[in-house]
Amino acid sequence: MPRYYTLSALALRVKPSGESNREAWFLTAEEGLVRATVFGGAKSRLRSQVAPFHEGNLIIYHDPVKDSRKVTDFDVHLWRPGIRELWERAATAGALAETVLFSQGGGGNWPEALKLTGLSLDALETASAEACSRIAVYFLWHWTRILGIKPDLSSCASCQKEAKHEDFLWYSNKKEAFFCEKCVQNPDSLLFISPGGRLWLTEIEFLHPTALKTPEKWPTDAVSMQQAKALSQAVLMGALGKRLQTWDIL
Image (cartoon, rainbow, N blue to C red):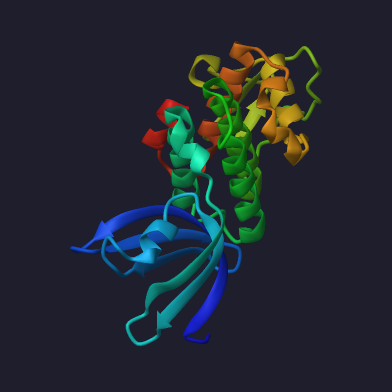
């Protein structure tokens, strides 16, 4: 690999490193998660360019001897300033970024992971406080698909019977599957989802990406959305091995 190379990148996290430098984590279409050092003090041009949720062409210098990387330039195409104008937007965007980081950038499906994360952040930039939760559930549920862990909502894992429109299902984190009322054991210890919750997840799974700009129009009720959010987080918890604290604000 050449010492200088360009990546399509989205900045996820930036933290101070030493007196004047910073460490930055990026999601890239070519290499997944990339960590690189941003050198320079307060007057450095890169300090304003390398910031969370900025997206563009990232130029990296790689030292193969030390196996270290530094940012030499970041040509930002998308700044997304609106995310910082509302607490709910910023908090939701932070939760999405943490999800990407803790799940290793989506495995090897990096271009699709970058696209989904970018579209979700674009929607958050102008979203109302209420809509932020809907966008978060959309992202989390689609993220389970990118990771290859999305459970089948259409049938019972035990009897294999197709779930009818009016059926209730119970999700087992241990078995990573749904069970119908006849097959479920110890239902009080499992995650319950109603027909409304299943319907809403099915609908957002097939929503056109442009619909992310108008989440207020997605038909649902508070109970169904809460169930969808709980299920999405439960499935991801099984893959990550922990619950992310940033999910608490969603």
